[in-house]
Length: 86
Image: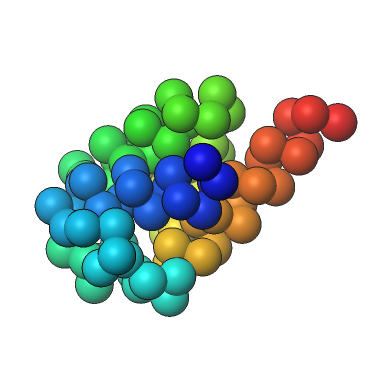
């Protein structure tokens, strides 16, 4: 399963939606994911991909990790994985 497919699966699960309902330009907010769901999504992604996401749940807008859309989350994960593997 690709990074994109797995992230969409995790996000869809948090939003209680089908993966087909999650678009690349969807924001977590537009999918109905609240701050607790965001934190749970981050933890699930970290566990799935064995990475550490530089995310501060207390100040999400000041995070070094862009969570503005599903596409930016996927891009951030791919960059972290590439950095980890280099």
